[in-house]
Amino acid sequence: MSVDVAIRKALRDDDRHFDLDVAFASDARRIVLFGPSGAGKSLTLRAVAGLLLPDDGHVRVDGQTLYDAATGVALPPRERGVAYVFQDYALFPHLTVAQNIGFSLARGWLNPSRRARDPRVARLLELFELGGVADSYASRISGGQRQRVALARALVSEPRLVLLDEPFAALDPALRGRMRTELLALQQRLDLQLLVITHDPADVDALQGHTIELRDGRVVV
Image (cartoon, rainbow, N blue to C red; front, side, top):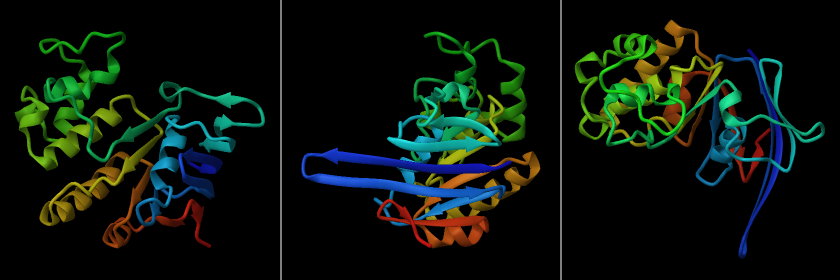
């Protein structure tokens, strides 16, 4: 599966100006955007997900155009087949683990039922070894479990591409190493394509993917 991104975005906020001008293409199963804070990594990820509208350029995944300024294509996030895992996981603290995983399956404003469980949720609870905490609130489980819940929620809609925003930054050093290993094992088992952003060289070494370095809103050649 190929990822082809070429986008430009000018951001203006009072006296602060930032120009994002990023272009890369890859068919690697693990793509890593690496660079310091403020390099434009998260902006790029948000543009791929459809959470940020570029000023110009295109975003294509597996040959499908998700955004193209020239033709006026701008698919909404739900129609992109792309899942976004936020750095802080963005779990709902008032919902159980199972409800969090199944949240995107429910239409409208109603939360998923605590009693009726979609078979897709049940499968992911087993896959991620979360059955023992399925009825626990997300605010009461460990950091490693929260990351697995966030990944399971991203995968429940069977996306073509999973976007991970600094997935290990919020973890303590010991847990960080273990979760890198778990993520790699999961990616290989499910044959997922990942686009990961990080500022940590240790993540780059562990993920061993196609690494693209960003600085000041541009790809370092």
